[in-house]
Length: 184
Image 1 (tube, one colour):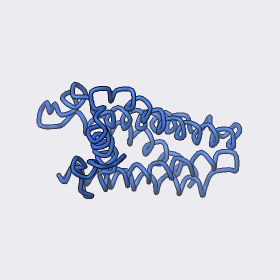
Image 2 (spheres, helix red, strand yellow):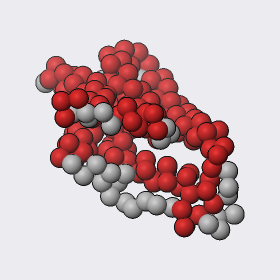
Image 3 (cartoon, helix red, strand yellow):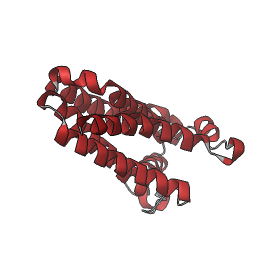
Image 4 (tube, one colour):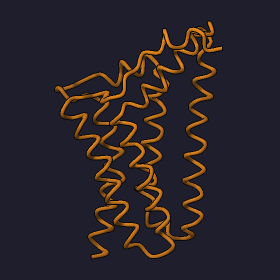
């Protein structure tokens, strides 16, 4: 079944974007996870679960970015498709993989919102930011050539990929910081 897999698997652990901006993005994910964790410690019981889930998922996204795990998944899928000679029909599997990541993340988010009862209302913006980031990561994971070309555009030397990712991180980090400031 996996006879030719390793000859096609082309991935090494490490930073996918070793530029300064890449490392700053990793740091931003971890800093945002810390802000969310601190917010969870200060939040009233109903909203605590939302902040805990935000902290956990932001830390996971930081690990994914730091170790280039998204490329590992893409490389594994490509290697499997090439080894089993179904690369031409890979789009169906890409959709299945996206659903396989999106569904558990969405279920975790719904579980957190339900546990928070009414506390999620105070956290709607960071939840929206997290959903945006998850969608962004899933779109990147599909590795569609047109999307990759668009994300690599760099008007004024700033890659569109960076702007879009930082927008999502900011949608989580800024409300967490505001919550902490109000909580004293």
